[in-house]
Length: 174
Image 1: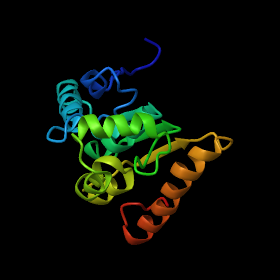
Image 2: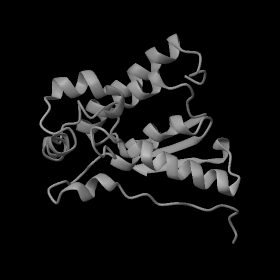
Image 3: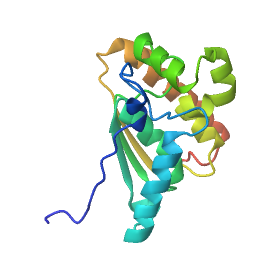
């Protein structure tokens, strides 16, 4: 009661598609993206509760951080806070969980095929490029002693974000 807010916790439905999945990054099926399905539910809650996008805070850690960044385009002007998120699954180096997700969610399609057809489902920067609107504020927390994740996720994302910001006025804060 001391905080005038509420929250909804989301569990990745992709994880229920098979016992071998350690991570699903909210991919769902090739034909039915879980991030879009979850957005529809959350948008309906927001509508029923009278919550506008600018009052939404999306938060996630690791794959949940990926979800929060990807979902932010559905809540224009929202706030996002992430901790050690994956931002580019093609450069994510923990191959086992990623490969099992690719096989289950994209039914044996090659990584090249998936990259060409579904890049905006697997790379935050591509999703943001395709988006009509972006979050107003993103707080990205990273353990810089996690060299592999810093090198494969955070640094390339930051570099692309700076480049993207120079070519797109929607990223005025960069």
